[in-house]
Length: 298
Image (cartoon, rainbow, N blue to C red):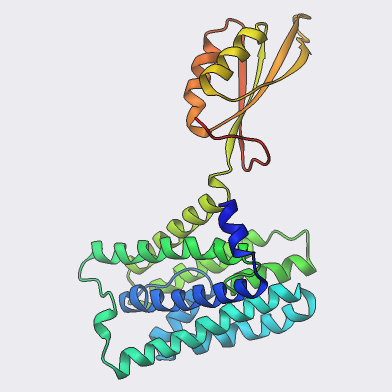
């Protein structure tokens, strides 16, 4: 992932080209998988999708209209590069959405749209867009921008109210989309399920790309046999340990605390190793990101 980010950031103009391309692909994938299957993705795009369904006005026009006031404010209070990249994404997405929709209509290319004939196919459509957006979103962040909508809103709130928890605002917007979709799409729960599924899949993919490959597990192990235990950890798990002298406040005995960061899949093996050494116990905690010399060779 680090190599991908370096490539994306290699050229300032290259990042704008990449953002425009991602926005165009987002517009095309939305037209193919979302709009024909009557469900709304989360966020501002979800609201625009439902308005298009009810009023027949293209998402491209509505998305630009909703984002316009936030972009104007962002130009004056947020980073200029970030604002311009948001403008690039929003404009490209909106223009390409209108263009693709007109091409499909004028050239009778409706066969390009994936229209689900069963619930399984509808779930497939929601998952495909979820996976796609789960990849696009972190790419736009690494390029120094975002996909607009709720991202700009969250940044503006944070700018004026740094202590305010924007998570609840975003959750309320996403929950609002899911609830509204129930009424918009004929008082059925199925569109709500598709919206939630799409959100979960995209969130899982984005989280994995943001930190999944850099996440790990930290063990803090108190032991009276630090040499033997650390040797087995290093030979078996191939990760080093940091030894810290310690004293048991209850027993008054001198011991050692070993600090070791390992891959998540090595947790069971670590627990097995610790259990072999009498009097030893470990505390396990998640590590969201690792930096520097942490080799994932195991």
